[in-house]
Picture 1 (cartoon, rainbow, N blue to C red):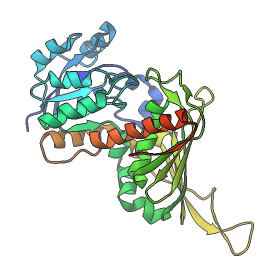
Picture 2 (cartoon, rainbow, N blue to C red; picture 1 turned 30 degrees about the vertical axis):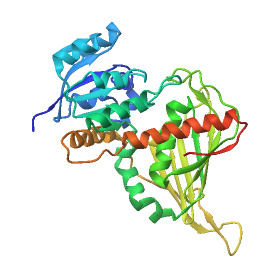
Picture 3 (tube, rainbow, N blue to C red; picture 1 turned 135 degrees about the vertical axis):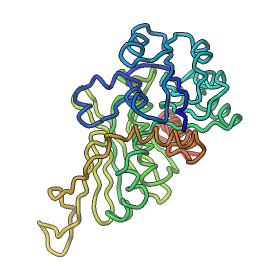
Length: 339
């Protein structure tokens, strides 16, 4: 199969900068879009667009990209992209896709919309009109362990959920969106939301105007997932803790650590049971090639042989949940339906 002509729009941290983090490199063989595109045989990475000269120099000199442009129209004319990787902030992504006549598939970063635009819905409209499949980079949906858990492995290990707790920092639209998507991936759809505190600015978020607040989500089976926030100036954590009927799954450090805790006889009381906090079974991490696997899926959907693992339709539900959380906060913590 001939490799798909590929254009990357935006060349910041997730596009290439994360490869410079030496600690991250210990766990992620593929930490950025650039690291995947430079290695994946299904893609012919021909062009990069960015407004910053330093980013274009990096694309040209380090990654050997033949077309580096500040002007999108010029890059489109030279590359004629079949694949677009949209790693810019939201605002003009729908316009970018509309200007690319040869597209077979799109990979886009979250969030899908900014605080003052409907770029995600506009992107969905133009792609639906032209029959272009879209993959959203919620990378946990490509992780082998997490896909196995979502396919029944979690319920087989711990039974039905009884309580769920989540932590995030650095913004609702930034890190929290990953936890909302991960929750839905593992446990199903969200029916109602409720803010548990006021929405406050998240100055460290990479998303302009981002906010954060504690909140609760009710799932279809009536399980309640409660989320709190942590200040990354003290330490960083983005995680999910699921307490089931027969044990507990704790996924911490943004997915680098996943541990099952079993049910056993209670050590302090007769005729009762406990979830043993000191007898955990650590899952061997499979995060290293998750982004590469996301591109495997991208190649397959471009070829028409697979459906998106992380579809635009699903990602827009995450956006709706975030909007409703903020609406709940504005209404003093009212419990609101998602639909």
